[in-house]
Length: 571
Image 1: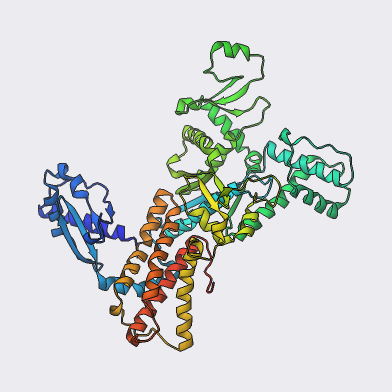
Image 2: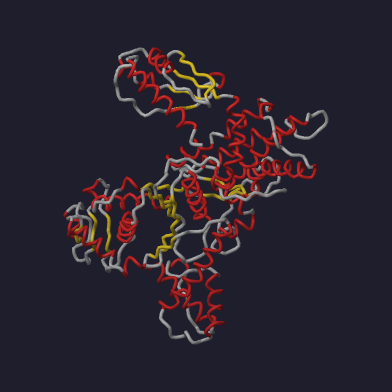
């Protein structure tokens, strides 16, 4: 079943075309049809206000337009009633019989429930995490990991063929620092008198994990690496760290399909080809300073070695950017442009990048470069993640560089749970700062949304278990016996396709977390009143309710899966 919003919009399109063909409406181009819930629940389930927007185009009063559309609306089994109301709204009411019948539809669709055709036949790539393998995943990267994986799950539910990609930053000065840092730790473990750089030097990684790596390396090769170059230590540390990163991600049910090595862009020459292409386009110049600087600044710095600058201001940027430093090494901009050219060349219809707030400027500069080289930047959408604070006892937990003090994603999982990490990091707009309440995340009560949502699933599973124990079946269930509370819950369940459509069109993954909370809020009070087994409950009603809860079980399982969360049968 496709989105109900789309289904209602389709009725409007067909009705307008029929009204125009019949001469009840003049010919005009219908703007995008937007269907929304009405302002007040008593007005119906869905509403269309487009008659007000096309009044000038049609040269008619909005209410007359609405009435003409209603007159020509085709019949639909999901619509029980429709009316045109002043000043020009069209309100739809869903059929109660159709709603009841959807319980069987939900059960039949199972884990595919809510899937829509928005992206059918299209390929999407979601690139997320993409952390340099210089240390364990820290909490700052955790939010992007959850949002990226959830975005991929939602795109799959929208019909896209999705690839999850990790851009493996294994080139550049940071990786050299990693190699030399391990080299120092290795020599120190062998007893050599090696002085490490000061913490504020910026060239030495302080993490204790490198001491562990050094011990592992000694266990493997002994002292045979005393005279090895830093490159060998870099490769060893990179391999070890990347294994840790992958294991950490698996703990929260994240696995990537593609790991793209930055080094490959240098090995293939793509980085330098990109530079040449920008030069050929007249967008690169050599100078010690930006060419927009005053003459006195240029004269003052004339003795410095020149860098190569990307004239991005010609494309709308606020200032030009260095792409090749005066020591000949590229900045992030050049390989990033080359990487995105590579992604575009792979034929995706949609590219989603999940980046931290510190990349907000960089991704815009990359788009300038792609546009200059003919790349279709309309395919690229960037989700910028704001920062996460950890809160305990109402106060911010200050992160240290010492492992074990809530600095890493592993620490966060250990302190809470994979499900808590996923939900808590998802349940707020990516564009807003997020406070992760450690105390709330481990609470076993309705105050904790993770517990509250999963407990709804557990309750449905408990009903199904009890029915099995009793030998009670929902065969031949008469769904017409379901009441108003059950219908209200079914109605909300059926908006899952709408939520998936909106989430993937707006790239707002938090919507699915809000949806899950709404379902739980409807479910728990209903569960207390709508019992399957108990004194005075007729068998026919029990069968109908059992079938209903079987459908609810499917919906909660599906929603938890879209969020990457588990479905425990007991809590």
